[in-house]
Image (cartoon, rainbow, N blue to C red; front, side, top):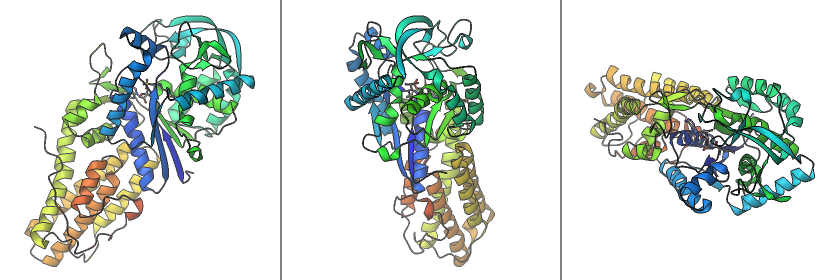
Length: 494
Ligand code: MSP
């Protein structure tokens, strides 16, 4: 049962390079959920940020001849700017180089050490710098990391280890019984079999001579903290003074980082007797025109460029319309344009324009008087119920599908009733009222996905730009109020 407070997180992204469409995808998804729960009256805290330490970032900065901090400051700016551009309504942005974060991580490391969860030993394992993760022999494909296609380093080193193995049974119990809910279900099963194979203690430190760009261990100045332990703590330090939100209701991520989250992250919390997150939702991976997105192939999709070329809402809409959230999907600019033209410009844009023009022409721009409800009001109500249930189950594509069904039925309603031919003012007024009310429903329901457009619709209806699920009640639109028709919402792309 979801409570009144709602804490949602995205992974914090590595700053070895500027953001790409995968980062934008997770962050927009978190924004959609945030906006949805806000209109449902919850107090939401939405956190995102950047993961700035570790070998990967250190190596890139070195290759550019820059000091790591100087290098990451530039990249962090491009993340922050992008989130503003994409209308991301995060409450805070955490950087793992923030002084308060670093301080807190040191305290936590000391506590874990004092309580005996961290001990000195030797560690041997394969390590992929691209993933900043350890791999088991069975993870390797032709001796290489399947994601980065590189041979991992075989590391044997003196290190501080975290007693991950001692949490195995507790983790199994939590996941099996959904006390930590892993979604979709296939991910839960995948993690259960991974954990059943046995968890080893993991190294949580690096020799400073190798990785100097990290938080120093408070109990041994020759070592820095493993980037993941540092990174996980963002979810706590990023709340700053808002501890009341703990624990997270939803943590979003892709499949690449579920394993570390569902094992190391949760065990760290268990070790410190802290409450654990309720749900981790794992979405799929994007390919581009059927191919893996990679710098080498030169097909990395830049969300900034796309949002400038088209429209922010068009991008937000496209990303969640076609691909079921939770499954892998393919990014195609061609499909984006097709959906923009047919679903945004033709279906939605035309509906708004037709209804407002008819209201201006026949009623001087005043909302007419309704006389009776009909199937359109029933459909609005049904759509609201369906969207509510889909959003509760992370089924964004179903929610959009139902909203667009309502939109196309509204267009059909205009055509079937041949509205433009009706001379009886009362009858025409009623039909137009029903359509204007439907537009108000559409505006509220689409708000989490395409907030700018939703605000624009509200404005054109002559209403305040306020969004609340409670306003999804038929008949709230007052007769006699003036509409304010504005410019056409989506210009078709040739
Ligand atoms: N820094 C770690 C996370 C630490 S969280 C405590 C990290 N960073 S990352 O920059 O590599 O971001 C990984 C996340 O970005 C994925 O889990 C996913 O949310 C998103 N995506 C990165 N590439 C993606 C795709 N190609 N497709 C979809 N999402 C992707 O891992």
